[in-house]
Length: 131
Image (cartoon, rainbow, N blue to C red; front, side):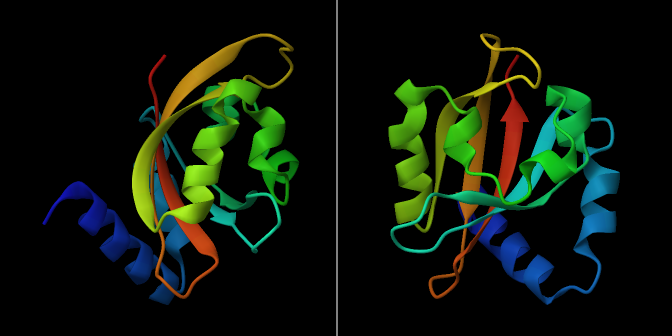
């Protein structure tokens, strides 16, 4: 089983779990890892759904600042095509440069691995901070 298949399996198990947030927070508490879900409706921008607390620790964004916000609002415009890949493909890996909260020109490179069930509009993402 490759890493994308494992992520798809994790996504399905978290969808079925009653308390995935507590488990994920324990995993991401100290590692340079961000986790979230994105909501995708056809014709609409990819928006944050659930967001791990690690976004605050690593990039300075409060969870409430990101929930419901379009991903492209904090992503370098040159990387918007990679956001489209997340919206269109069932799974994959892309790099995005995301603005650090409170900094107009400081970006951090992220490696985004995502997966979703075919019939679902929710995308589960595991994101590694490369810087």
